Each structure stands twice: as structure tokens, then as C-alpha cells.
Length: 300
Figure 1 (tube, helix red, strand yellow):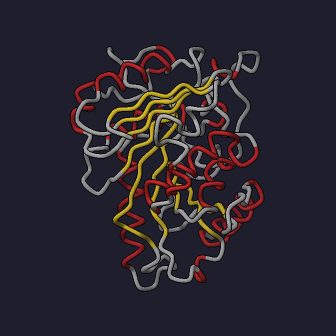
Figure 2 (figure 1 turned 60 degrees about the vertical axis):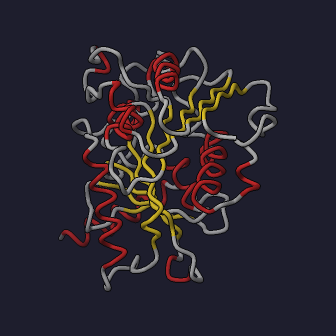
């Protein structure tokens, strides 16, 4: 019975997901070894020609327990040769509780919420599972993952969750999408989020990137405050006019944020210097776009 349920879930998730624009068309699935999460990976993982996939653990916006909500964005990344393990099983998205509110007010993940709020520890579960699968001889991931290249990232609540676990020594990169820490414990609609103190920023040991919408983004001020407080590691802060808290994740292939994510991961984990031009130098790709606003610390 469990196997038949898994097959049906996989078939449904494969239909929902996009294959991405990268050279390795992606698939979204629920792995029976980690049913609490959703996996995005290249379809033909058995023919990577020696290429090993870096690992990305993803936290959902709104503390959502739906690993399929960001399918367009995450599928795009996977199609460029990455393994994404998103918190939450794949579920059909539910309509927002307040459909009349603007997207920035609704939040990206709340529209796809499923079940109880997720926890940052589930990002560690994702990393543990991926590393174990890489070493398990019967696994399709056996010796196909690059366990030296692990990133945590997420949107809104998921970005806070990424910061909450960032001290794990296996993590080599943190990307926070509209998820700055609170100066006081979150209340109201944010009460389901973990209270991660600002002191957590002192525990960062990897480069950290903060990317968000403009001042209409509810996490805008918190992201700016986090960036100011980071002094021990390289940090990058960018935001774009005309984009709110909901970002572009649900657009085809993740929209503009999808392009930024792919370039960032290709640069940081695959040494792609062409992709790095989007972020490096005074004339970086984002710097030359009048709608993007960029600040850096310790990044040329």
C-alpha cells in the first residue's frame, strides 16, 4: 500500500513540476526514505558523466509544510545540476486565506501551507539524508553527490530557518530570500516562526547572501539590519524595485529570482566565473541594473 501511494504521489508531483531550462531536465518527487520532504533532481541521475551534484536544503516560506509550492524555482535550479531537498512533502497548493490581499501581504509560502509549521531541524534532516544516500551503495545517489558543497537557503520563514542552522560545519553557503531575523520575538502572523536571536549572525562561518524585494517586502528592514550586523564573514545584500515579499518564485522557472539563484550557486559551488559576474566587481551584472540595489562586505 505504501509503495502504491508513493507512486501516485510521484506521478502527481512530476506533473506539477517544471523541468527547468538547464542542461539536465529536472524532476520533483517524494522519496520513500524521506517522506517528510520533497526532492528536486536531474531526471537522468544515472548518466551524470562523473558530475557530482551539490546539495541544497530549502526551507519554505510561511513555515509551510508543502515542498511543492516553490516547484518552478527549485526545479529550475535542479536542472542546472543540483540536488534540492525541500522541507515538506509535495502537496497541491491551497488558496490563500486572504485572497483579496496583495501578494506581499499574503506571503509566498502561506498560499501553499499544508499541515503544521515546519522547523529548522528539518533542514538538518535534509542534509543528513542526502549525505547518507551518497554513501549508501543501493542508492541512486551513491557517489553522485558532492557532500563538500552544501547550502541552506529558504524564503521568509525558511530563510530564518536557514540562519538557525547555519553554524553546522558541513554547510558552506547560506542564502536568505526575504528572511531577516527579528529584533523581538515574532508575533501575529509570524508567531509560528522560530525565535532566532540576532546573536546567531555571529555564528556564521560561510558567505551569506540576502536577496529580497523592495521596501514593500515585509522582511526588507530586517534583512537590511541583519546585513549591517554581519562582520565576520563575506556578505552580499541585493534587492529589486517592483518586487514584494512574494518574489518571483512561482513564475515560470522561478522568474528573475530563479536566474539569480542559479548564477549564485554555479559561481559559489562550481567555480563558474561567468556566472559570478552577476555579483562580482563594481560593475557586476546586478549593479548595472538600475532596478537592483547592491551592497557587499568582503566580496569583490
